Length: 302
Image (cartoon, rainbow, N blue to C red; front, side, top):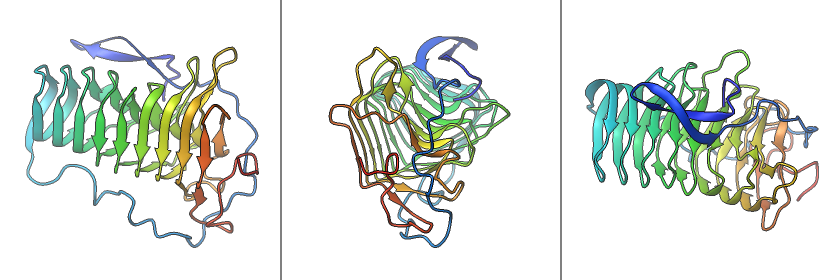
């Protein structure tokens, strides 16, 4: 998340209007680092070559150039084999975008306001003037084999959406930025599975589940290679007076120290909430003197 924005905005006819997607707070407190003895980089304990990178994600082959703002308004449309220099806006339901590259310095590189969107084998290259490479406003989207870079945030992902086999890296930044590889714009039914999510910046997270007014529920963060940010995992935690989060499962992830000795600049995890059915299981350090050991909460296994 960047610019300290309280809500995310959307674009209609070139004008930004309120879209109601929750962004991370720049004023969140910094808990004590849970793992003060987390490892520094040394020999890896795991071969992580099976995780997504630039060779297994993004658009390929011959692409047809398109310049300017591309807007999809027909339900059930398929957009493929394009190289877009501008913004892609999906304003229809059940749209498929496949083998497309988007290069943009606009507020959103890709903005989704229709449900049931499927985006596969897509490259998005933004820059630090953007909010995020992808803004998933409507939710219930499927994202596979994406290569996202350049924007302060990789993707803001909505309710009922999933991100799999994707590569988020080299996030753009500026003084005061709050970077997230993945930030949840929704709070329920979200899955992140088998992605590489790397935030080399000291703010805010690789994965921002959220510290907000609504508790998170039915969240799966499973089998990802993750590193960087202020904390690698941030949240979930509702604000005082709200219900606790539930069924948030952060399992079998590989935490890397490639950017910071404690995974993130301040540590591995902040604002974790022990809610109904929440699980922190099988998360392992990739490198360092404790390579192969469990990434724990507060120095203790949950």
